[in-house]
Image (cartoon, rainbow, N blue to C red; front, top):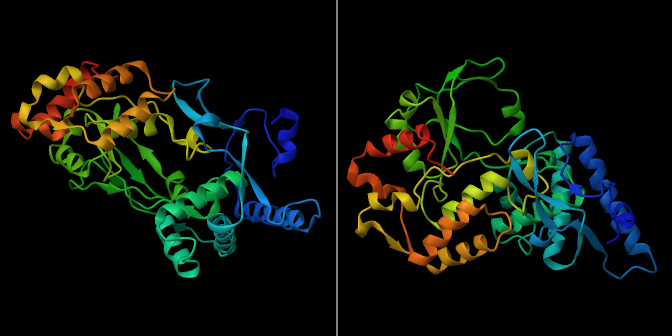
Length: 358
């Protein structure tokens, strides 16, 4: 699409290149929903339009994404350009209309709901369109791409899965402060409400933030009080392949933290961070017993192939992944336990102090 035609095709104006989702007040989001509906109805009433209209959504495809670098930082993130894909309101794409209608009501009531709550409500009201959480998640991102506002601006927030522990004191307005260095091994739950997070007062002398994807590893390091040996904060998102795990899925998660994701490309720049690969790499394989290695599964190879074809993957990560594919084996971070349950904390502290990360 020519640059001159971009603004005309968009519902809410356009920049020449970078497309992002705005943080908006509920009234503004409701106004954008109304505009979207009026545009759709006008298209239906037009004698020159097709019988079923289509919605101009920002394309969330690899062909429409690039990597941008921050001007004042070393953080790079995925961004989407103003290229549009056309999706009709027929069949499963009717889902967007149901999501917009429900978000319109939620915002009018001044509420916030979790994506899981939204799924059960939509499953009850429109089961023919929402048979699983994935359908809801995709419809939400379609609405974000249509209205170009953040997910939280729609009144939708992620479930509270994360936890943290370490050298950090949290203080909510009108609440007692929480010293995260004296908590139990399960740590402090991280809320999914970004409005609450934005109001927190944070105090810390930590020099490092260590992101751990496995809750069991998080609790192991918390139990060992790693943050008393190394000035750090431990964070986990629970339940996903560990960033410190030497397998393709772990590297995929690392890249999501580092650059953001294409599916949430309109918001990636807000959440990307310059995370480093701290865990198992090729040079560490001599620490692992031969019996602890596992064969790469077809799913592992599929993820590896996708990563190797990515234009975002940095060369040091590409070399590690290529070695993994060539050997056909992967190793979990727990494979270090034969050296003792306290070895993992010492291993991580040593690598950080020596700068042994990529």
